[in-house]
Length: 144
Image 1 (cartoon, helix red, strand yellow):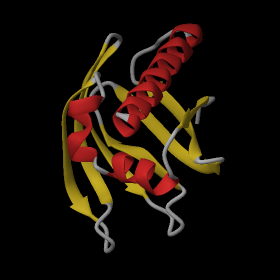
Image 2: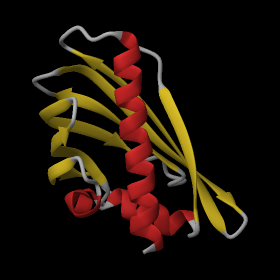
Image 3: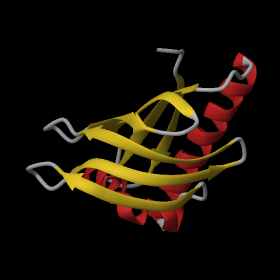
């Protein structure tokens, strides 16, 4: 798998609240600007999303993705990987939550491998833009 892009942000809310927003995949189009549609297709035994379909419309990437999610029992992280896409060969992402003071430090790691060639510098720039936007949108959604 290719290199991962990683960014971190502080959110003034407890990890449970932050993870609750992250787990509500159906609401992503309401607060993530690049998501046009999001639908949970399958849930795990605990009711967390296991498979979801999203329609992504980012500047460099417009595609419908199906992703598989893994939720560790401690609920301090969630990871996802690509099941299907027209434009991507692979996509792996992770949110890691760490309590910090009265809030939460959230780290977002993302690695994308396009099915079409793209210069590494442009790919990393796109990954940075996606992680930066997602973290800022998450912070805004949680903090109000």
